[in-house]
Every structure is written in structure tokens, then in C-alpha cells.
Length: 509
Image 1 (cartoon, helix red, strand yellow):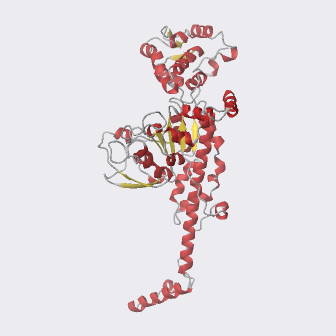
Image 2 (cartoon, helix red, strand yellow):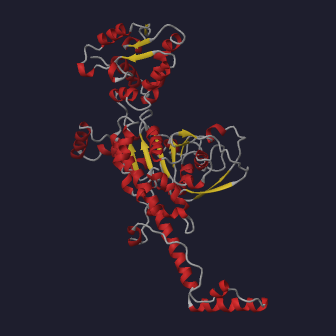
């Protein structure tokens, strides 16, 4: 059972429940997972964005460490309260009062005492206390009133750079409930649109209305830049229109981000927005609407204290704000910044400060509740080629599986993949636009191959650029296909020539 999944089980900590022992088990130790492990798993699914992965791994690990500490402290407090009540019940005064009360009722009933009843009269005969919690020693030694603040995350970066994939992969790694929504339809109370409480409703739906699981889930809010104040940092006139989806929405989210009780009313499945509201995943799988009976009007109280909020947005124009601030810092500092950027360590957005976000249009209180900021950079052409081929669910692998259903083997030359990646960079669509490009390139092949004598398909650079149709080969012509592929890639070094989507024993010699 994964480490963070056991945190969900830990929410059922009560003094009379056997699951309180979860903190005494060695398997729940924080040593079972660390930021480096999380980052390594992210590498299997997300290409590039090394700095963002490091920031997210540390933030998420610290968040769930805080959750564990809070649950342990809660258990200690419950134990202390019960012990205090037990000591009060065993005090001489309380014991004497209990004895008098007992004899009063016994005399009224005129019933003789049984052996078991007479044993209750002794001062040490009180009901035995519940089992003692065997918690880690560190929790008992450091019981100062130290509050571990929440560290929500703000992801900044262009479209198609992997923001959504990072958040979804984190949820799958940690095996916690995950919900994703768009901030665009959010409006403040009293206006037509979605209330901010809908993000918690979708989180509940993603885990079949299990409140305990939902309270340690992850909420991902995309298009967070749409919540910026009208005219804030973008050159528009302030208060030019009624700002129903800007500052008012930020104000409504403040307490939720910090930690509060959100009451969610089950509305049934009659509204037109059902498709969007029932979205959510758990352990990588889409969760359907709740299968257990739900009554319209039921209210669910969800504590958001241990829910991790990840907000993301393109924040178009933010880079100009940061550049302007850095440019006013003096020639000496600016030259240092430029040198660092040339080394590839920091970009302009890596140097975003809270003041820049405020100037963009976020209110100071909102920025203060998003202490972790990670910048996701635009993917390069080389990164996009890796996106096509390397991740577990890479597009090239997906199309290979699709063609294999028709007993057709498809291969891509390296130049073809580079041409597809180059188009994505030129059109500024990032990784999100790769599927559309692949669909266009493979349209003829997907039309011609099923139910035909075609057994091999080769996609070269001309096909990727739309200059020619895919090359088809029948059974027994695999050698001829490999010759054509080899001829196109001969200008590359031997160790860089690849036949993608094939097992290693089918690679070029």
C-alpha cells in the first residue's frame, strides 16, 4: 500500500478504532518516499521542466508530511483529552459521588448486588481506558503549538508545456483523489456561472463522495490567470466592465485555499453541466458518478485544510512585467541576470516575485496563499520529439498500438518526428498540438490500411510535411522499407539513427 494512500486511512483515527495503529507501523515512515523519488516518477511521464519538477516534488512531499503531522497531533490531542477525563473520573470526589448515586438507585430497586456489580464499588473499578496510541517519539517530544502552514502551488507557463500533465501525474503517483476544473466559468456569488465551491463538489465526485478521501486530495484549477482583476497589469482601463469573474472570485477562494469547512449540496444529475461536474480521476482512472444512493439536497461538509490546491495559467504578459522590473535594477544586476539566462539556469519567469503577480491583477491576499511558484518553460523542438516517443503514453506508442490492431506495423523516421515537432513550435501549440498534427499526418494511412494488404507503413519527412502520402509495404517487404528508412537517416551519426516504435532487436544495425 503506497505511503500517501495510508495517509487517507489515517483519517479514521479515533481512540476506539483499530486503525489508529497506522502511525506505529514502520511501513508508513517518511523514508518510504522522498522528493527525489517523486521527481524520478515524473520523469517517466513528463519531458523537460526539471526545475518545475523539483519545486513540485518538494512542495507536494512537504504538504503530505504536514498532513501526517497534523493527523498525528490530532490523535495525541484526543488521547490527552481522554486521559484528562479519566483522571477527573477517578478523583476522590468523583468516586464518592458515583458511589452515592449507585447506592441510591440500588436501595430504590431493593435488588441484591451480583458478584460483578459489587466489584464496581471499588475506587479502582472504573471502566478501563481505551488503548494507548503508539505514535512516533518525535511527535511526543515536540508538542509545541507550531502550526505548519499550507503550501499551495501556482504553475506559470505557456499552453502545451505540461502543467496539467504534471498535476495529474502527481495525483496518480500519490494515489489520492484528483479533480480538475477551469477557472473561466467562475463568478462571484449572485451572478450566473459556477461558484468556487464547485471545485470541492467535483473532488467529492471523483472519490464517490467519500469525505475522508476527498479531504486529502488534490484540486487542480486551470486558467487561473482569468481570475486577474480587470485591467490589472495588462494595460486595460480599471473598472472598465463589471468584474464578476476577477477579484470577487479570488476573494471567494481565499478561505478555501487556507483551510475551511465547505458545505457541498448534492444537486442530483439533472443540470446540463453534469458532464463537467462528474469529472475526476482516482489512481489514474476516470471515476463514474456515485453508484451509492444519494439524496438530492444532502449536504457534505468538507474540510479543505489538507487539500492541496494547484493553480495554473499562461499569464500572458507577465514576462514583460518581470523584464521591466529587472531592467530597472541597474546595469550590473541586469548583466548578471542575462549571464545566468545564457547558461540556461534561470529564465525571466523563474524570477517572478509576488509584486509581479499583484501587478498582473492578483490581489495580495490571494498571492500570499500560493507560496510555491513553479515556472513551466516552453518546450523546445528537441523536447517535443522526446514527448512523441519517450513517455509511457507517448503519442507515437499510442498510434503504434492503434495500427497493430489491424496487423499493421508503422514506423517514423527521425526526420519525420523532427518535422512534426518543428510545426508544433512554429504554431506555438506546444505538446498539446502534437495530437492534431499526428492526426493530419496519419489520416491517409488510417484510411487506407484497415482491411487491406498493407502490413507496413513508413512516415518520412515528406509525409510529415504534407508533400507526399505515406509509404505502404505489403507482407515480405519489410527489408525494402528499412532500406528507405536508412537512406533518409544516413546523414545522422550511426548511434543516432533510430527506427522508432520497434523492439530493440528490430533496430538498424
